[in-house]
Amino acid sequence: MLDAQGVPLGDRDRVKTPEPATPEAVLTVIEQLAAGHEFDRVSVGFPGVVRQGVIYTAVNLHSDWEGFDLAKVLGASLDRPVRVANDADLQGMGAVSGKGVEMVITLGTGFGTALFTEGRLVANLEFGHQRFRKGETYEEQLGRAALKRIGPKTWNARLFKAIDALSRGFNYDRLYIGGGEVKQIEVELPDNVVIVSNVLGLVGGIKLWQ
Image (cartoon, rainbow, N blue to C red):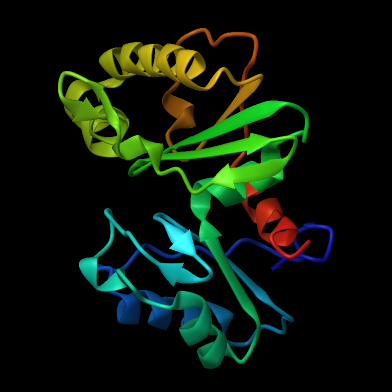
């Protein structure tokens, strides 16, 4: 729960993602979290391609999400206006300075990406599913499953290579890194690469309405 400036109004509520993570199961969890709270609107960060509130991909959740109008269904359920965006895009909205070309990557279950120019979101990239090295994608090489399999040392070496590749490919002025696995970063980062707090994703939820 946040005020209009993005300041938390209480402690953060967290629950584990249900398995299997079908739309029905996830919506039930959201409804339970919302119960008993007074609020005016809802912002949702979703790990996949989102267009006008409709989910197009959900690689790490469940295939039933494809084509699901999350904004419409959740809005009807909670009786509040709802806006939905890609989770890395929300992180970026809260992090970017609004100057030049800025890129965001999120390191967690998957590998989220977002690109901004002069503070405006360019596109819902989902670049993590592009080929990176040895025939595998950025997500396959740097997602949480890979981290558990190869260990922090090799994972950090791969991350350094990924940052170099993204820098050459997008020529960004600044790269922001967020997500649950930033705590695993041990390599020395270039001067134009910044680790940011996941709280900025919540701030992005406020900016989604501006």
